[in-house]
Image (tube, rainbow, N blue to C red; front, side):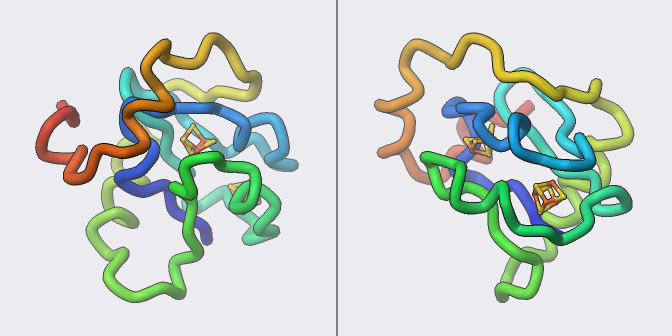
Length: 104
Ligand code: SF4
Ligand code: F3S
């Protein structure tokens, strides 16, 4: 499966949802997550993300992100179309440690 990570928070470009063939993205206020039970591992979303927030779960150190994606995919609504991107999305790309700062 693929996993949405820290870099998505407050960027939320949503280009990913437009290309996913199985519509397995779920929307929170500040970021999206992928439902690992639905993702078919096609990989097409990864290069679409301007923030490079989407990674394959074969990369090291993604366990906590994997759990976060799994948990919130059960709670948040499905999203299949791009809407308005946050006005400061490009500035937020430079920020690190966004989980601690903005996730709630
Ligand atoms: Fe959707 Fe494919 Fe990305 Fe999984 S890897 S979230 S199926 S686009
Ligand atoms: Fe987030 Fe990238 Fe999608 S910033 S909303 S994972 S295009």
